[in-house]
Image 1 (cartoon, helix red, strand yellow):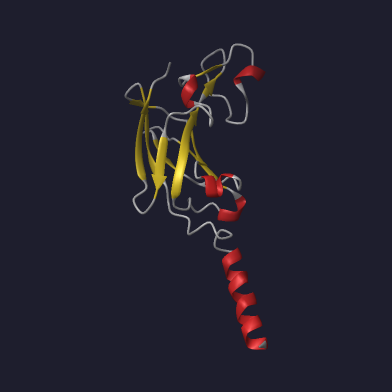
Image 2: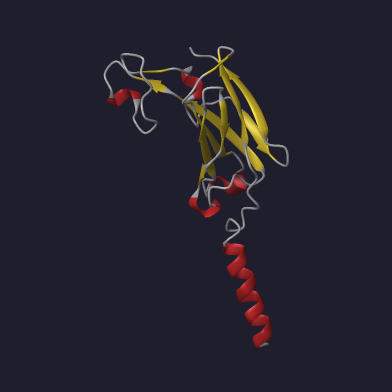
Length: 149
């Protein structure tokens, strides 16, 4: 009996380190083009669209480089920043510039900076309104083409 208890305890311990039962995180990367061109500094966010995991708010983000490429490197703490588990996700994009056109830090909101604006059409910047949905599985390299306005 004690052996089974120890085995159950050990199994629970290792399950806790594998994403708290969400599944094995998979690498997620891709390219974003705005009006057909790569644009540096776009935050690409993935937010769980699955009803089973939505209450746990599975999410991940990455940022585009000069070539428009991104890799999800920041995730819900329970996932350890290694990617996202299989499932359906809403994909949203944010890139804000100040009045002079300079890229703003991702944590600053347009409404908090006079003259600032989004470089991306507004319907793509909201988790709730974005029309973009993707499924994370075994092949997770995506190409997104979105408009600036």
